[in-house]
Image (tube, rainbow, N blue to C red; front, side):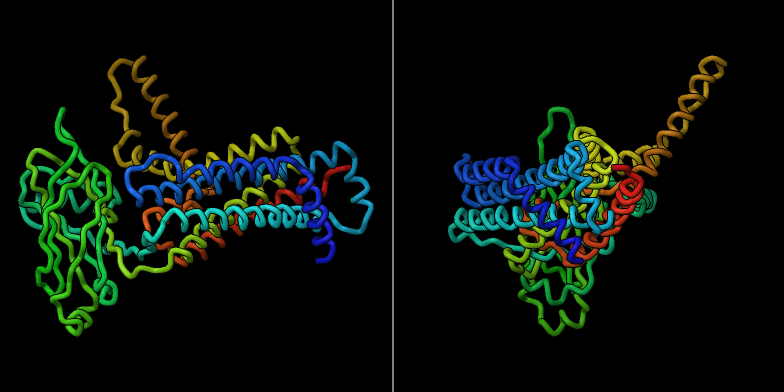
Length: 433
């Protein structure tokens, strides 16, 4: 362990001598301090803007440091032949790599503490008494449809079970019903957020009218009409003050939200997670810390990946490879959506023509699509999904980041970091100095 710490100390000293660290810190400070002066309509919007800029800046400058610092370190030592003097000492190549990684993690960790503290302080100053919340989010266990005939309801329920959007079209008789359980302690201070996807007629309005009813103990406790815009979340309060707390406890926290479309000319796309219950406000400070930790997990993974690349590539190629991995890792969710769309819409099935030449072209096209889908499937399965480390949208929206996400993300990061460390060691132990 002392050998690893010795190498880490050398990395810290080396990193502090590089100007890039101070340049990144200066740009972050300029961007952060200028954010409260950007024009916004409301004080609440200004706070959200500062939060969004803070996390975006932390992610951007943190990743730049995680890529550029390690990418130039080892290749530079090899080029200047400093590595020969280090390897003559009884350090061991694995300890050397671990020391490198630990050193970069420590210096970037110090950078995160400094930038995170400044961001938190600026958010508190900008808030000026505005409540900073971190509400727990409860997703519905079930989404079903009632009213109308079964021939219209079955296709809607099938699309929901497949994880796709169910388009609520046709008559107004059909209603969408979301169901929850175990909310007896949360509903006393509840509100919900509703998000749909609109299908708008040409030149039509950009909103849809909905009627929302809330039910508990088979009793309607909520009846209100709201206007939603396409893919724009809207919040509405849940008031259950007229229900006896004892009755609510006996109901095991069962709750339903029923939605009926009021505009006949519009179709709305619904998913099971389109409606969420927001309740039990928690600590914004703790939530902010969770967001910083998740970003730091991503930075640690990029440090290990970049160190692994630097063991057998030049600085420029290592930087390019790391940037490719980072950008691709943030596109995994999008690529999964593309794959799911290709599979569910039957894009793979090509109707063959009777013309032999056209038939040959169509067969080759079909095979190419099959190969592309096969590649896309394994790419999205094996490649690290870095989007899971970004929760800035939840923090800006005042949604609590579940502790289970921290645990699963740490395990996820550790697995990929371990794989990258094995690759680094296999290449580094074969290297001749």
